[in-house]
Image 1 (cartoon, rainbow, N blue to C red):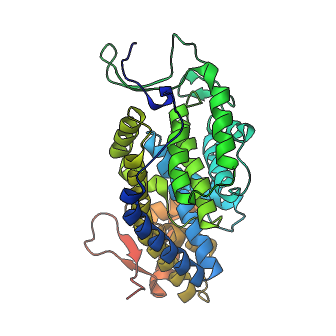
Image 2: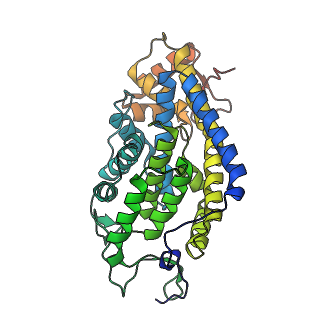
Image 3: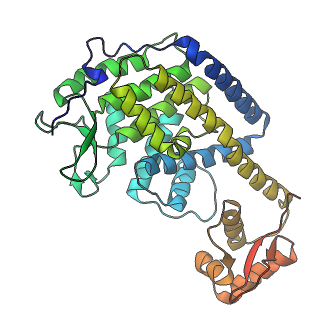
Length: 374
């Protein structure tokens, strides 16, 4: 498959990126203000609330970074894996498969180990964690090492039916990767005067343009961004998810990458897109934090209420956003108890003004939480 485009990694002054500071500054100033306001707000809240918000953000980050690549992970497995690895006591944890565990391990290593230097070995470990079976789908890939494709079979980002393919991007040849990645890692680790948020934007573009792995480059690029943003925030806790926002803007994400990788080394438009996306992620975090605050207030209110393990499990599921309608048969199935026990658990919560019957009736009575915020 032939292509005519000249990519930025083929330019003689690659990777000497440049951008127009005057175009970036108004957006950059607003972003830093919003970022500071969010972190200040979180600092003013208690440790337990911050910990819960961090967990919810990490779960969102893991789920959405995979969804960008068309991969949908089981939310309960992700929640269980994150909670266990953070040593949190959360009821109803389910086993997580090797793949989920690997994605969570990479994400946590990037964020909680944000002060550790980046290295080829660390990136290889992340890649191996993403592909524990050594396969991407049905295809065997090189895992835990730079890709080693032949020149006659270049690494390309392609769309379209067979015979009508469109090449969106072609990465550097495999024999250049060792030198390219040494240069990138040295730059990433060195002390710079560049603002940390801008560095996250440049690092994301630079890494994904090198495209050093057979697969997983997008997820690892986003993990590198998270690592650098954690450094910029001076915090190993996350209260906003860049990946969740990129998921919402997936189409424009791919468009701006393609435009930038075929352009000049002036990456002003990419940085503006990245900063706007990050600003939207910070603003969207209000929804996640509102949900966490609601949950925290619920358990504050019911701190002395006597509840059994089954009730704790199901109330947490409702507070986290239960899918579909809750009825006694679902209660019995999830908590592994009899139908009579499920009905007793539910009736007890109705008597305590925690659950209520949904209006409308039907063949199966369903239940919702009482609006305890009003």
